[in-house]
Length: 241
Image (cartoon, rainbow, N blue to C red; front, side, top):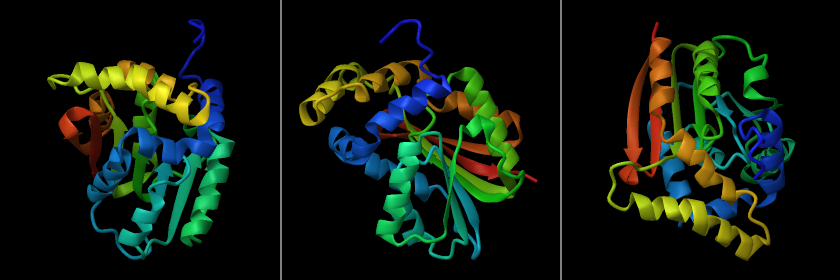
């Protein structure tokens, strides 16, 4: 990787996920030994029961990997918006929604920091594995956007791969992220430009604590959760008022 490249820039992230979009779901599942699917389920577990007609948004939605479980748990949803910066990911999300029979989905292909979504328009916000690419300034901006688009009393839940500091197997886990996952990608797909970045992003991101602090600073009630010794961390809670 070129040391002069801004790996958090919209252009870099869009290009990265456009390139890996067609294999993103099953490669993630394979390389994580199924933990990504388990963690998505646990993220949804943190949402409260949603009322009939609820409207929600999946930020950095990828290919909509969480939607089958979401609609199964909450069949009375009025509408779900899938937002992602990557055109290829949005195209994959459309295909996935058709496959699972989800008709009440709206797609927004945009940088989350340049969206024109109405304020106080969503009953819930979810995001799974979509925030690790953000730098500290972007995480502060994201916290403001989550606060802005949630209705008063609205709920949120997100999860992200993290650095399990304090776990005695941390060094082995981080070696796996940095060195082994790119090899798996290379072996099965013939390239390694996607998973080679996961360790880089996780090194900088660490875990969800900072984003949680930023959400709390904006008046949201926040619960921080560690999953599998901190290999993933999550935030959940509500917008007060």
